[in-house]
Amino acid sequence: MNRDGWDSYDNALAENVNGSYKNELINNHRWKDVLEVEIATFEWVAWWNTTRLHQALDYRTPVEVENDYWRIASTSEKIKIRANA
Image 1 (tube, one colour):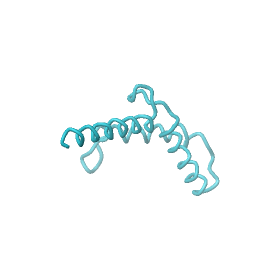
Image 2 (image 1 turned 90 degrees about the vertical axis):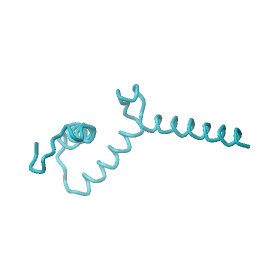
Image 3 (image 1 turned 60 degrees about the horizontal axis):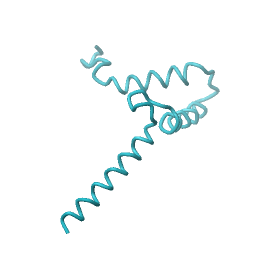
Image 4 (image 1 turned 30 degrees about the vertical axis):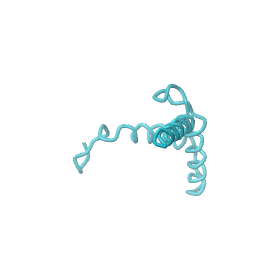
């Protein structure tokens, strides 16, 4: 528990992502400057969302899951509109 009364279990998902970020990217390099870290971070986040498979998402990417959500949501909305017409 930290000084504010919170512990890592209060935000387990964020702690997991931050741990992966540090282990997979930050701790494995010697960085020249902050700009290099920022660019690598943007690239890592893009990879995390578009390429990396996530066990919690049935080994799909977050982008795939989001696309499926919007495809289903838009179909559901069209059905509701037609049913009310």
